[in-house]
Length: 116
Image (cartoon, rainbow, N blue to C red; front, side, top):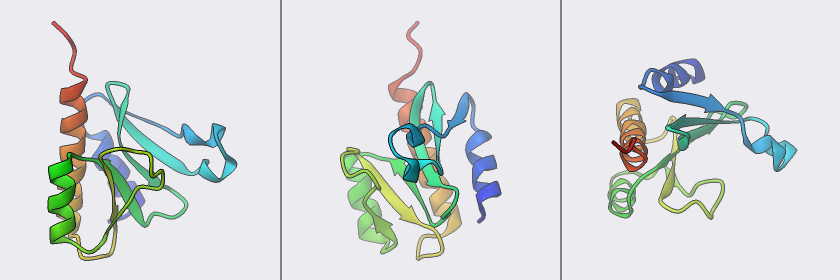
């Protein structure tokens, strides 16, 4: 998997937008690209160091992912509740990473669904 493929995958989902919002907090975060659905972030990567992706999950999901894979870490920002960092080129197959990104997208999209 490469950066272009990953970005195209994220943007292929309905209502997804991308931003680089963290540079305003610190110049060292200028390279963080975040993907949003309905105005809420579901994944982010570092485009200068494409070595990981952070995705949102549930407490149960995080426990399950950690029990199955070693290439799992904490998100860059430790205050992000229910987020997990998945390392590329580790023991997590690309298909599984795409699946976790999709789960994150679905979770955020459902949580912030439009009210009738």
